[in-house]
Length: 181
Image (cartoon, rainbow, N blue to C red):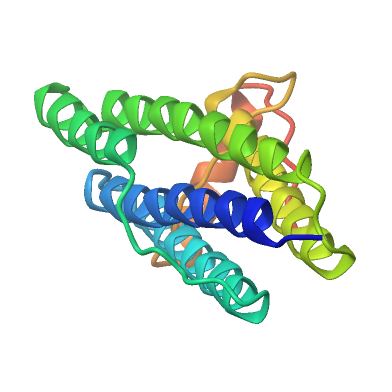
């Protein structure tokens, strides 16, 4: 079996994953909520790790890792910056960023699905499928943050315990069920 189709697919996937890494950094820069900033920076680091794993797999298979940026990713990040700058209001900007993350993640999941359609070696398939699962899991979190299910996830950091108690009291007063980990 020639590794050329596998290497080609992995190089494309690496570009998409790198676009996600950069995209999450842009998203972190465009929100004021410290909790979301940390979450998005963490996702950028996760995607950097995924990219490095993919690049190492390409080398293991005897290929050359081609470091090129995704043109669509560049356009998408620019779109996030422009729309965020034009959006008035912290909450509205957060909603816009979460919506744009959903767009980017759709492209990422499609890239993972297309890569898994290639006849991959077992070890490579396990790596790609594991990353795809992690991306899908985070997409579900984004859907919760956007309120696209029967539940809604709020992300917020508090400096003091009394701020937490006050926020929880407001949620309970609004008859909203609160789950915490």
